[in-house]
Length: 319
Image 1 (cartoon, rainbow, N blue to C red):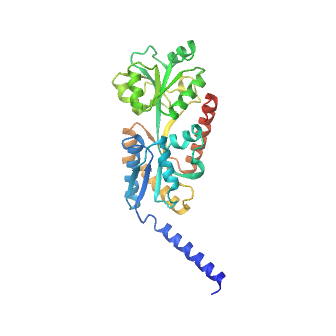
Image 2: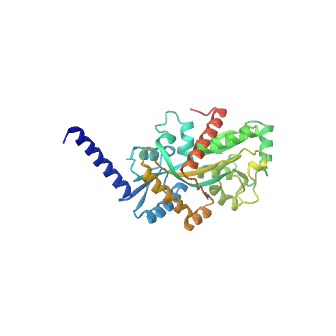
Image 3: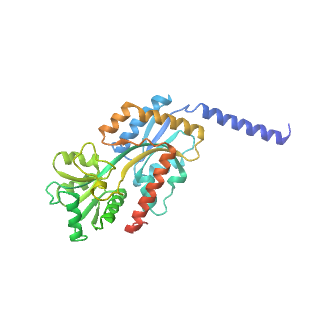
């Protein structure tokens, strides 16, 4: 056989082998990287997704917690893994939308290096003050901040919350003094104790202290009111109609993953998010399912980055 024919035959053999592997997918266990610690919100949702995927794909799906560096460690592990569909990553607004804006020389590009399989969950944030605070409403807080710019301090424990609070401050025409924390628990302890005037956190994180009358929830960041706190208005309905932001997560794979494997995962995730057990999990956790297909998730992600980049530029926070 001539060399040219041998080369053609070899290429055909390689293509056939690749197609066979895709058709057999998955033929081995799958790893789901969660770039945050065990017990975190991302971890608990990741484990529910892993269990549901495993039951539908017929292969074990193991959760691999890789916390650190605001989710960068886990994201980089996913980026460096083979693009064969056997490594998935549960990305979040932190490592997919916030890090690219506030971290200089980030070693990954979330829009180029990864492609979405599906949204997973989204959760509202909330603005809270100590229970004995003189500020009974969001309007009270804004009025106090306008009366003495920079006097009131505002807690945050991650860049996403800082950007979310800066966005609100910009719309309201006010200025807080930001106080950064390394953990939500320490921030909320200081908030309860009155060491800081206000803070922004996930509603799920604030809820126990609000229900115990240790904190007062002034407003939530969703498009509509939170079902657990129907008496608390949204920021949007409080006079800032363009404001809405959530913490969110999405299932991602490397962008080079084949279309056939991607389609299998996309179809499977549709069934996962329709499962009653997953719906129940979201409701109990105070979140809602983010039923975005790849195209919708990509558009949502890009818009989110554009919004946060504008906010960061206005606040002088771009690195």
